[in-house]
Length: 436
Ligand SMILES: *Cc1c(COP(=O)(O)O)cnc(C)c1O
Image (cartoon, rainbow, N blue to C red; front, top):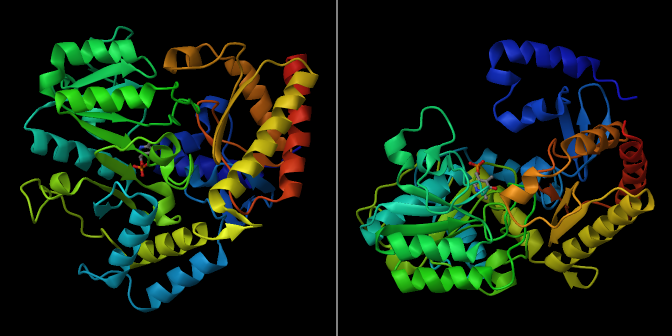
């Protein structure tokens, strides 16, 4: 049995100082009704808590750690940058280098602006789309997460053409009313919205591979239809690839599905574990951004040299081959092996799961039925997941504390890690089958 005595004490103290004891809600493990391990250090595929427990980590800081934790090259790059000073608020060669590297993977990004978080990237991309089109409304899919800026903290009841209602206190009704939420993977609902409001819609923003309601893949032809409909109405198509960028494939979902968006948002991986995100796309649109254009957006620490260096080192690693295949393929093969192994273990004991994979991302739903959108996800067996999660944690497998989060593979995960994880999954499914 895992001992978490020090983490428990640390959590009690933290709760006195920070809301829920954390600086980002999901870290509190509240949905799992347990104590989050407090992390002391990480290396490769492993993280270690302050009680001395070791875990194989599949959270990867919620996505960024695709080359593994504390990668020597990334750490060296950060150290070298730090010795030259931590911030100047002036242009550096590092920004140009990272911009070029990103463009190599994402040719649709003709011009880019670096920011500090995914939230900032999507918020700024929306402002840009509104500035460029002179329109106010935006469309988002229910269950997609695009950070916590006001216009994007909107969900809705069922029904396509209902206007958004805020999903957080503090978001005004008037802001939310410019956001139209539509079910993911439902092209008819999307068409209905565009028929009614098409001329008023500045942007359609979407996670082309949805990773924030568990991992849900786009139906065949869905993204293509979105491209066509936005073109027809002069609406900016924004792919939020903050999570699926460099994961669905190295070139993101846009390369995997062959669809070119107008604007792309990136984050997570491009900072190599430091706070970096970016938005970029068509040159004629990006030229609306200040100082060239009249859409204002700025950042004291944007393009920070440490963060740029970590991003550059990470993307340099992703350009290499691993055992004769490129990084995308290497990651995809590892992930496939794990997912097939987990699936087989579930089958052995008759537990119903639906698994999805996109490159180095995967998800497991405790469900009999296929999952296509947020509503399907809501019907999953929460209790079964909770049993499974706690058993996995006890066996030293660190997963996101919710089946509605995506799980991430890294280049640092070994064959032994994968075998150990599959073994642990077998034990955990047996507990689920026994209902405890
Ligand atoms: C994580 C995430 C964001 C928000 O990024 P932050 O850096 O947490 O602000 C936005 N969009 C998607 C798809 C994400 O996964």
